[in-house]
Image (cartoon, rainbow over all chains, first blue to last red; front, side):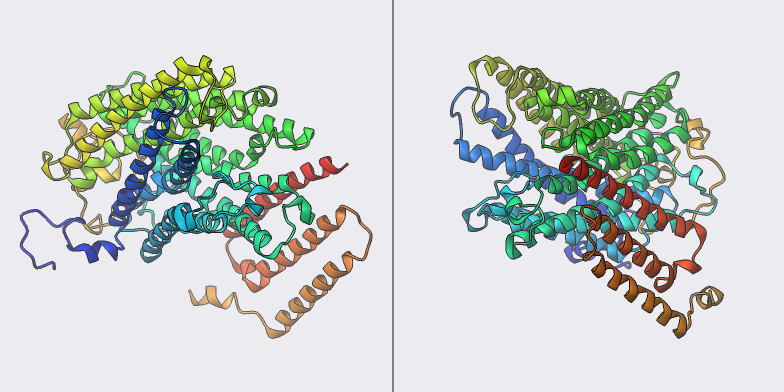
Length: 539
Length: 97
């Protein structure tokens, strides 16, 4: 294969060709792209489901679907988005593509295990989708599978649980691979505090994946045991405790929020210095705040259960710990803003998405404090306020972080440039549409609009209509962004090795990178964000 | 590398001693049910299980011969799980009293 005459220099995209070479690829960059294509497909599907739900709610009464279809759509939308898109999302795609290059390695520690993780992920995703349609019973216990309902209901609960369990396995394997890679494969001279901040965020994320995911895996198997063998873990009729299930479920599922958001924080931490041409402000505080978020994030799960019959003592304990997470998060926001301050700010698409991330994440964070306080949480529990809050965190945070990463590393991944002006227009639609869609939901939530309701009181008509218009605007932006990126994969202008004048290692090798990244493993002699490289001088 | 490997070799005698201790602790776990400890029965059983886990990790999984950093990492993981279990059971305790 290598004897083929090619006009382009050999790189990871063309050193082997054919479908089989992709399906059996152990190159971390190719596996990252496999994840990218799979996750993007699932994301677009779930986004269309979200748009349909919003169109349904644009007016009172049935609009385009029945109430039963609406229930099935929000369950499917939630399962796809949470388990298949946002939890693996950034770490699986950009962690795979960038981590080894950024630490000066030729690949991850276990390349075959990496490919295996991808197939485990695909198996779990297919099982999840199958559970929605098999035997004509889609699971209706929500993505949280709360017992005793999930232990009794006659739908595809076991299939859905096994899907979540399988997806969890893929997450554990990826986390393990990244931890070993970071410990064992850093380039000579790359001490812990010379490592770029995106790998640091992946390191913190990987520990959560490794330690928290088994808890939910075992919990889901306990539900299976309860359904099939009638062992009384959670069902009060069998002597079990349903609140114990919620504890075990959220012990994983709250840290999972940090699995989603920490890599996004790492991405924007790379983008701000590059587009400000200035060292990152407060390297060490950013490192330790990532670790602090990962650690403290383990102990806040109970704030999901304030209205579930948990003890009074536990409620104030979890409320207090939840407020502590705000401290490392605020440190990060301060550092990002300070990095831009006084810098040579270049408003390119990646930076627009990164600044949007701060704006949306901050709104999501502040409204999170409303939910973290017991008194106010009880008022807005299970209303649209909660839906708006977690979309600001998950979509505004992880989603915009993902788009920022895509626009930042796109020239490196494909060796081509996308259309900058189109990217900025698409961002404008996405950002405007996002806020028009979700902000009214805060207000409606405070006014008492329950979440997951098919129909609503006439007083919510205006808010619902505005929100639906926002969904359409955002979807236009999404399509414009995807068309721009997909079209220019082959037709875009050739990208130089370092189009953004970045200083981390991925910008010091050709675009697209060679198969094994480096001809010779680099020796690191300084901190990661020193802006005196030849590329900056040219500028 | 070979020296490192040699450090992990343990004698049959030692392995049998550890096996004996583990069996003793298993019997203790069963006998604990017969004592009337009320809500503390589970806590006691978990404590004995933790002791057994520590012994298995230390001797059978050769953690004893590993570097301090690795031992601290494994210890940290178990500490984290211990805290999570304690927090969960504190809620359980306050709900039943």
